[in-house]
Amino acid sequence: MAIQENNQILRFTTAGSVDDGKSTLIGRLLYDSKSIFEDQIEAVKSSSQKKGFDYVDLSLLTDGLKSEREQGITIDVAYRYFATPKRKFIIADTPGHIQYTRNMVTGASTANLAIILVDARKGLLEQTFRHSFIASLLKIPHVIVCVNKMDLVDYSEEVYEKIVKDYKAFSSKMDIKDVQFVPISALNGDNVVDRSKNMPWYEGSTLLYLLEHVHIASDLNHIDCRFPVQMVIRPHTLEHQDFRGYAGRIEGGIFKPGDEVKVLPSGFASRIKTIELNGEQIQEAFAPMSVTITLEDEIDISRGDMLVRPNNVPQVGQDLEVMLCWMNQRPLQGRTKFILRHTTQECQAMVKDVQYRVNVNTLHREEGISELGLNEIGRVSIRAAQPLFFDSYRRNRQTGSLILVDPNTNETMAAGMII
Image (cartoon, rainbow, N blue to C red; front, side, top):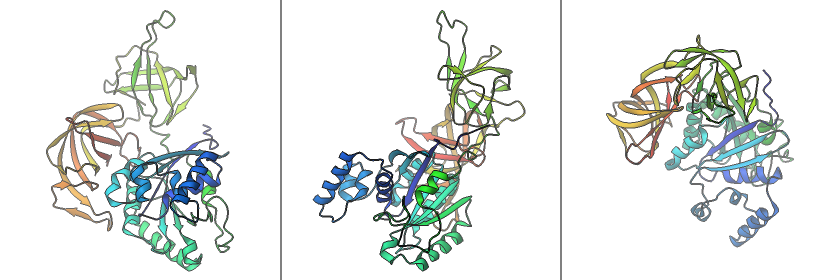
């Protein structure tokens, strides 16, 4: 199976403490990779002059909310897009403040890679630990630690090496597969897109080079075949009178015409007749492609059902153990009812109890608690009103994640990872 690295989309998120320079770094990436229009540059230059800066404040390229520009901080997740000849990029610029941890979870949930910024003057802070833990919890496969503001510590190799040593000692307790380190100055552009003349002692790659060449093709699960049905297509036209297709996004594995599949929850088996993408038949499809599949047999299938391999089925059950990030001002208490959304399924569910809360600074479990507050992360037991077809989040991020929605207000209350 040939999955092209070239022109792949790399989704990455930036995280760090307040004033570590996340927005400036993204602005520098966009500016140095020639991904900004002239009028945007002029607007940023004039804004910088109005503020009395003697430099161009590139952070203004990402901070879109008025309150963000006034305070000079990031509040909401800002998405930015840019491309180089090697790859396309989607950036989620997430806030550094503790009260916006839920925004970090939102931005990181679909990321292939996390850039964690550390201020060279301050070293590792509480937010460094918090964001690294969230990256580990969300199973982001790749992490790049950018030691920023090297210009303010005279480009000292000793300062950089100490931060690298401290971070390696801390991250060894967590489940992060691939960690790389880059000393940078986002303000001056050192080692962001172009190599720095100020740090001849650093022999590694620039940040952009790492982003362009990190291998992400094997991050998705191409072993367990999972196709949650999103929609049944029945055109009822003269040309396609008997057409019955099942549209959705492949969340795992590789599907080909002729493959035997099993339908959950009914358990009926059939073979794939055709796979269509944009109206054309294709010979194989894999995650995360959105396709329409037709089967050789007439089976009653509806939204929320799942096509899998007969000898490789997900777990099926109503009782779930979940790591939950609570995202609402009102605390979560046991015996609370929600609407649970998982892949294309939706049903009523109840959080039975809160088992423990994780202290994201020490990684210790805090047991004997009965509720989770805003931005807190803990382990809970959930009972769903109908069987769900799921894998553990560690095995498949798509079929192992869920959200809880308030049935009265339709607010998203929590994001969960199935253990």
